[in-house]
Length: 300
Image 1 (cartoon, rainbow, N blue to C red):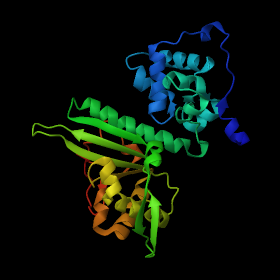
Image 2: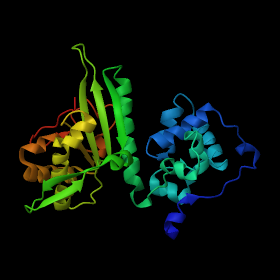
Image 3: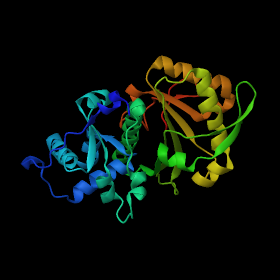
Image 4: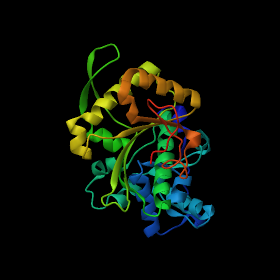
């Protein structure tokens, strides 16, 4: 760990102080489970939404502070919180034991203890912003939409298999395709069985040149969705790639790149910007630019 990374972590625990004393209750265990379930690293505002709706932000802050001082959670320092856009929490081994009931030793806790990767923490937190916006949209739909399944990048990486594809230069290559997240959204109507929509999320922070994005993401991503392994895991050779990026300019460049290299297959790629995403817009508002089409559309 670099000295800069070390400065991001708050190590000043004071469980002996009266206002930090606590007895672990059911809500506390749910907080720890939220952290584990949503990829291992969450901001305080994520936990406020997940567990403290209808209560004050002070109640959430007080309980997270007690969980930190009593050794169940790690958190960012003031410097780290500025870097992350808010205080970030992740499980300690003690916290992981409360989630992973029945584990035999510390080695079995490793899937539950995820340390932040500071170079990509803002990217990882942005993924959670989008996933939670989708979940809120489904909740507010009063049963029309439902999150049937969602997988983190860590889940997908564990299951990833290589697929062959042809690069822009015409060379044959293989690559493991790992989206930032996978969600299956079921849409319920009065016409019988729900419609299953498989969404493959990519958060783009302008780190890839266009050519690299095409060769590392687009071309193998298209082949992966058509592969037998994808069909076996997700039930059908169908999926829509959702790319959320930081600016309209970057969106246009990515859309034009994908249309150029993918041809008709560009139709499975959808693009929007961070500032357009909310629970009110993400599923049913025309904020998405569709590969091969000119006008913005809604996902549903």
